[in-house]
Structure formats: C-alpha cells, structure tokens
Image (cartoon, rainbow, N blue to C red; front, side, top):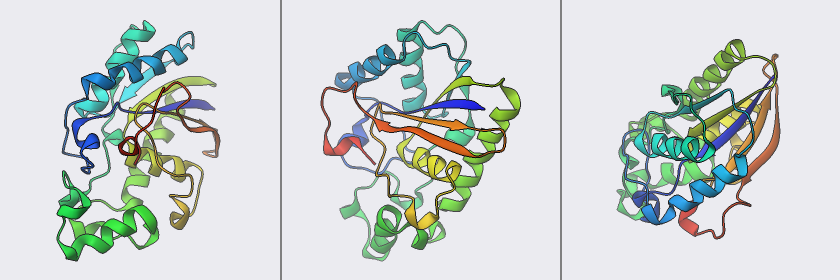
Length: 217
C-alpha cells in the first residue's frame, strides 16, 4: 500500500482569467498567491515523504520546488510525464465564450456530463486515455516503493480529478460528483497492492485563508 498526497499547482495567470490551461499551455504562477503553496508546505511539515513527483509543466514543477524548499525536502523532484494536464485540444488557452458554437456542447459535456465528452472532436484527449495513463503510473509506483510509503504528486486539476475517480473505480458519468480541485489543495488517496483505493481526504483547503471562483476546476 502507498499513500498518495495529491497537490494541484498554485494559481496561475490563466486560472485567474478563466482560461482553460491544459497539456501545452503553461502560464506563470501568480506571485501574490505563492503564500498559499507555502501554507500547504507548513501543513505537510514533519511528514516523511519517500518521493515528490511533478508534472513536467512549469506551473506544477515550480509549485513542487516551493513545497520542497519550505519542507526542507532535499531529494531531487522527479518528473512524471503521466502527470501532465489533460489535453484540451482546441479549448487550450480559451475561455468558454471564446470558443466557436460548434464546440460549446463538448465544453459542457466535459464539466457536466463526462460520459458524453468526445475529445477527438476537440483534437484533444479522452477521459479514458487520461485515466489509463495516470492509473498505469500509480501501478508503477506500487511496484517501486515499500509498504506505506508516502508520495507527493504535484499535478493539475483536470488530470487529478480523472486519476482520483479512476483509482476509486467510479463510473465515468459520476466523475464530477465530488466537485473540482482547487489550486494548492490537498487530496489524499491510499492505494493497495491489489490496486483498490480509499479516499482519505478530497480537495482539502483548510490551510488556505480565502477561496475565489477561479481557484477550482
């Protein structure tokens, strides 16, 4: 069994502008919000982590660096391509109102009816593809780390939500039932050797002193 500490990166410029930020767009972290990442680090201080993994995208890696420094974690941060954000295709970098009408239905499906979402129509990724790549990565961690190892994964709101639901074997139609993932939030999932999983805590923001509508996807 391994204990996963799932962290969404700090808030970025595109988050603040309501722009979809997927696998390829990578706007800077907001300097005025970095204290929220440090608040999370204070919450995790004193826990012995076997490893910190990060998405290759800059916003996640810089968040992981901030966490590591504040926690006095001295090992190198490991990059995992599997933690890259969901590929939104033509939605990348756009606000809902910027998209042509022919794509509006798919945007709605992504957030409200995931079982109807067709990533190919947007030249992007499907829920099923994203679930497979992330779950396979977790299975590889089970083979690598000893029992009860604690591992931080710094990633993104879209892909973390998909990963959590895939681990819990939740039907695709219910993928949004827990809600979204907030910037600098903490979700904890224990994954057993038989690949079953238990949700310990979801999107916990107790360490944050305020929330904004742009903080959660």
